[in-house]
Structures are given as structure tokens and as C-alpha cells.
Length: 330
Ligand code: DGY
Image (spheres, rainbow, N blue to C red):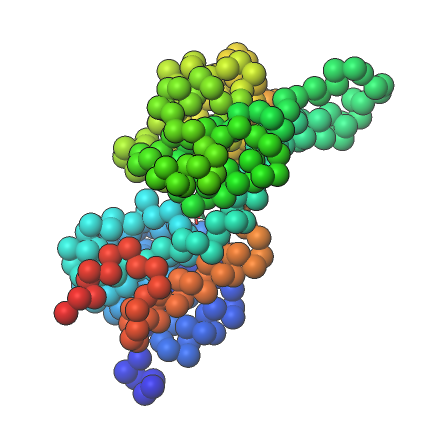
């Protein structure tokens, strides 16, 4: 394509050089080659003259930004969660939005399951103890945790990732499955997974290990707070691989401190990368820095999918995972 006619795009994060090189085959590419997210004001300034932007789940794509960047035609994210993007505002201005579902399902489910196991079996807590030189003798109940096999796995949010975690629990570990979701699965899907549908309250009461996989939205803000934690068994664990803000972190830290529940595993936090200070001082929580989808191949696949969406949206073709493909209708 004639270089002067090529659309201009901003890659708003440091990503894989091979993906930037692929984008350069089609676009004039500006890169923010950094691990620090641009602020909204910085994004607005950098997006003047751009038709497309490649983002992660961290860049605020607000209605104000969309109004201030009239040339923008496509916002393509490498994340599956898109609570950082005002999709209705984009749709209203004819801006295509895409996310990256599917390619990270199994990797994220692997991690969610691993985090749940690490939490139940007190892996990081016991490792800290060993590294500090505190291990002096074998003890009958040293770091005795909860079993996974045969326990009830409660899944809050039964989308792709929730179902992939459910399969691991049922097929690999003989767990009993219960779930709550905004929309109930079909009878056939429930039968295939062997999952019982429960109200949120019943799920909280019954789960031995609760895994949260719901997208963040105003409706799911603090879906789990003090009242919900009070319904859980004192022996239960809670694992969150969804989004910060779905769990009230202050209430969770209190519940862990008071042993209202046994333990938690968290990959996401309200206001991350800041972590509620009380979570840093309780021993019975496993904390990881938002890495559930972070296997090398999967992060590359997420970037490639965002690039494919950007290329299709601005050069031609059908963006594979558009969230508002109606903007492409003539
Ligand atoms: C996602 O894809 O939503 C992950 O949480 C990474 O941001």
C-alpha cells in the first residue's frame, strides 16, 4: 500500500516486537513502548490523527476520549475483559471495539485452578515459612489445608473460563460442581458438565472452594462483600481471577484476618497495581500480580488476535472478535 495513504495506529503498550512488525506491514505505527499505561489526557494527545488504537485492559477508553478523537475508527484490545472501554460510546460514534476472547480460556483456567489449589493447600504460606528457616521438625498438622478432590467447587460466573475450570475440577479431581451465573446454562450443558445451578446465596453456603470468574461491570461491583463472605463456610476458600472490584478487598481482608473463611487466592485487585494493605499482612492469602492469562504462547496469541481485529477493521475483512460489529454495517 502507498505509505502516505496508510492508516495511522497507536500501540498504547509495550507488546511483542513481532506483532508490531506485523502491524507495520499495514499501518503507520506509533508505539508507546512502555509498561506504564498512558493517562486519558496522554492518550487523547497521542491519538490525534490515528484511526486505530491497540490497547490492553488498562487504558481508559472513555466517552470523553472518543469525542476528543474524531478520527478514531477502531479500538482493539488484547484483553478479554473490556471494562476499561465505554463500548456504548464507541458504538454511538461508529468506532469498532474488539476484545480477545477464546485464546486465553484454557491458560486462564489452568491458572485459576492452580491458584485455588495453592490456596487450599497453603503452598505459598508454607514456602515462606520454610524460606524463613522456621521449619525445624515434622508435625502432624503442619500446614494442614483443605482437600480439593471430592470437595464442592463453586463457580461464580459460568462463561468460557468458568466452564474450563469446571471441567478441570470434575474430570481431573472428582469435584462436585455448583455454579451461579446471570444466565443459566441449558439443561444439556449442565448435564455435560455435571453442574448444579444455585442462587448466589446458596452457592456461597455450599461451596468448599469458590472461584470467581465474572466480568466487572457496575452490576458486579462488590458482588462479594462482608454480607456474602458471612454466608461462606469457615473452612471455605475464595479465588478471584476475574477483575478487581468484584470483591470488596477490605471486607475480604477482614474476613481472612478473623478466619471467617479459611483462605483466599487473588490475582486481581481493586485499584491495582496497588493492593489493599491489609491483604499484605494476612498470612492466609495467596497474591499474584494479574497473571492468569500470562503464558508466553497465550499472551502472544492475545496480541495477534488484537492485531487481526485492527487490520480487519481498518484495512478490510471481518474483525474476528468484534464487540459491536453493527458499526460495520453500511
Ligand atoms: C484479560 O484478558 O482480561 C486479562 O485479565 C488480562 O487483562
